[in-house]
Amino acid sequence: MAGPSAPGLGAGSVRRMEGLHLIEHRPLRPGAPLVVLVHGSLDRAASFSRVGRRLRDLDVVVYDRRGYHRSRSAAPRAAGFDDHVADLLAVIGDRRAAVVGHSLGGDVALAAAIAAPQAITAVGAYEPPLPWMAWWPRRNRTIDTDDPAGFAEAFFRRVVGDQAWERLPERTRAERRAEGPTLLAEISALRMDAAPFDLAALAVPLVVGRGERSLAHHRRAIDALVELRPDAEVVEISGAAHGAHLSHPDAFAAFVRQTVAARR
Image (cartoon, rainbow, N blue to C red; front, side, top):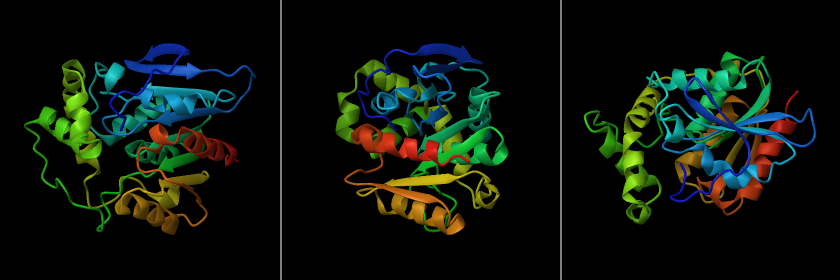
């Protein structure tokens, strides 16, 4: 997820599509490869700002997923994981794109590539959560669906830290709390005994990434994916943790480029 003060994305072509807020950064060179960056839970497109500035030669699309930030008012509200997969495929439209997802965005990217391999040239997944795995930590196993705003605040505090939450302006805290229903829906959708997609059915190249300093279960998720897809390329970002797109934009941009280059 994004830190408390991610900068803006800068110049780009802004448009709305079925309520989604999209920004496309077109390169000076026509015909450059298209890559779509997909953010994780309780995050937003702006968290890829530093990464995007390092990909000027590519056609880069970022968007706020349904229910988040400038796509918070998109209707209907996302009822679960499949709605985010459908949105990603709609963003790509009739073009072909490499797709790189951070955290839960990686799950969305994987599922979309399995559903529509004709639209996606390659997938990059940075530390996608695998909560259906028996070894995944079972924290917050019982979710209080009666308090989505409180759940969103607790999620932010756990992932980013209490001090980061306290530094947020009250308006920003209210915005984060308002994203609670979307967060609840997508987290609940992945808390199942079986995976929401069959990785063996992935027919496009896969690049997976993790941080050298990431939590043990985030790092283990990459090992689990490689067990299922031994041909996957593995990128480890030295000195980084889960938020590598914010803390190590150069290395994350290189991860994106490796994904684009992996296309067949």
